[in-house]
Image (cartoon, rainbow, N blue to C red; front, side, top):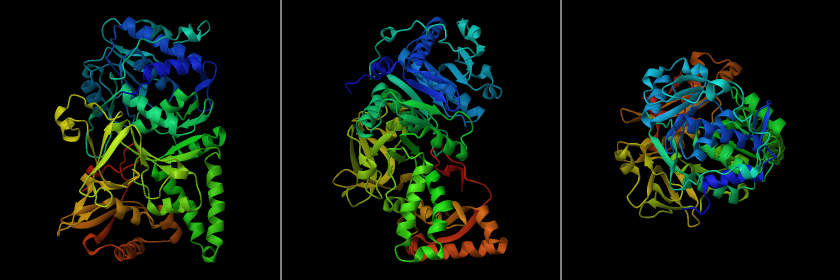
Length: 545
């Protein structure tokens, strides 16, 4: 177990940074650590009066907001279990999650409650509106303060006289269950990943020792805090460090994110690959490919100028941009590394809460997913781990307890001695840098038995201007590609249906020239709409055949 206790660290952060700004909804009110502490105490009182017990489950859903994270912090410091629910789940999935998790309280936007049937949420004591804490549904004797306070801050009656020494939470052992995360995943209805307090503090401990955030640093939170990537590194890590976190609570459109970067100048930025790749393909690559860019030395000069402008567009103040959640396009990565852009690539999964590997940007090795974090052991399930692909396996402080109420699924990935099968294929060098090839379950087999990794082919296809994103599949033992086309490119080039078909055929031939014979693409088929994705922007492959 990690020596640092998770709940103690929350208590200490509130006391130490008492008067510092803590949370804001972007362009709205700011709450100090003192005010957040008061809210937590008020929640504890409500939970206690309502009969909520330690170990009971509290679910919360909605876009990133101050009210969302108040529920999270109040729940884990009370000794209850938080169940974050992604806001893009449909009503049926949410009903399944609430019932499967045995949740007693559920905080969700009022608009979502309109699609839910409270009678089908059989275990709930209370259903509340997350943006106001208004009580919408109840069973049994629920504390009336939930109704009386309505839209008022639960902490208003406490914050004026509260002192740092008043913040004393009951001890919760790091071995206790802290959260159940129902990831959207890529292979169907997800399982409930059980993370204990030790897992959460291990991620924070590693981040504080590896990423140079300091108290008072500004952070923009735009990745879903209900997902472990955003939850760990845009919320828990900066909060426990004493940072000021601004949540993008409304629709997270690219222009709003960039405005927030220019206003707040965040010290750490998380991103999924798709965001950076779109900037490169839409804004940078067209300039690099112009005729004058082929003059010796010009591309290098242009690259440096682009790096400066790209850095400024992200606020200009960041230690690094950490890219994770899905495979990063090798061409984009190579360009950014060549021009000195401050980025790095991390690797993780919900089952590790999430971190598995990371390297600071100036130590990052191209093509890798960072170096194995020091709270984990790692190995490759192959005879030659440095050269021969095998499944990546990890064991250590931040590995999950298992899947909630699903022992069979737990046994499939977690051995009795604690080794977790990640489901990712890769190699690991002598310095423990991990290189990922693709997901085991995504791997295709050629008729002759050779392994084909669709992620590699998709990365190559995504480099062509006509293609926004690609999905490579096996159809009747033939490799084919579904492609979502770039409508701006088609309009700019004046392509009709025949022109589109001809250009896609040229792309296919061009790709096949560099592919082994066993992985040649038979045809490219236009897909009418953008592919359905997970919160980290991986395509949900099980939706497509």
